[in-house]
Image (cartoon, rainbow, N blue to C red):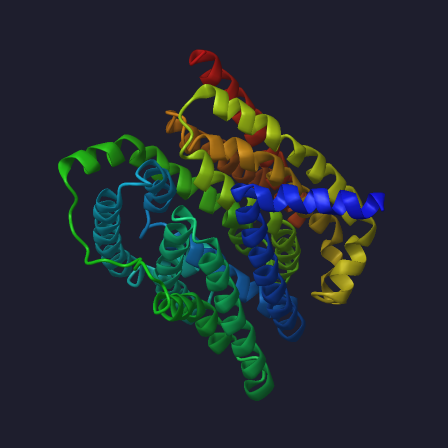
Length: 427
């Protein structure tokens, strides 16, 4: 009887709070999306093998880096200003029209720069697959369309539609991969093409079912809106560039200094870690959308105290994962990747550390400290770059894995210090 009563109390607590309901929807959606993508990546890693999977993964990392030239920090402004102007529909629309105007210009410039420079990129990262670089450039535009749509839905608190968007693009990828593997013997170029097309196709389908549109005719905003954006844009741009490098620099460096096989093994480890990071990502979406509306010190402190439970969740989650690390590799991406078991443990540990970082980072969407994003990003990139360059010759892929976890620890330390100093100043 006590168990039933406790379960009913938990149910009441979960569904009583709007934030809890939103967290539940987005977490469920994220886990379904990640589950589908995990199956898709298991298919790819097993049928392609480490070497081809390495070639594929380098293209993906390159795409994410290139895509930031069509963004330059604009995406990070979306949750901040849509949260700030949450109840001002006209201002929100004007803001989004300006975002789209800028993104259109940046995308054109991106194509004009990177297509001619593809040969140079190939030599720079020791990657003799020009056709994969071409698809990475095209895919960078598609992923920006998806990222923009995702953030607009999140900022409007349309978490069900947001979840459906993620699930749909994952399903398109999984079905496409299955068909290609079955009928075309794992054609790498076709797999890559569908990987890049899926997010844009999902946005197109979902947009037909939205009551409030997410795309508008691009237009320059008023001086007032541009002035408010410019206060944060530079640091936002630098921060986004740094965060993208944090997620992809290690794979590009391994490709540059080792080989496609080692890159594939490390990429497999990174995929497992990315699945483990789903929880922190889904929680982050909800926290950022809500905390961006907080204006006073008391609310922020209360929010941070509640978020401290994530520290315990990170520790428990990592301890539960450890005994199953090698089994997880063997029965998911395949036994060919077992040489990367230790790297996988470090990368998964880094994902759980990221859970601790999420509520701290979310605070800076409302605090008047835009330099946080650029400085925090620079600290992590410098750590990954220096650590990997210094030790990759001696320790191989472990140099990148250890550098990644060291970067996250430094980021947590800097974030804690920054939050403390800002709140102390506002006291």
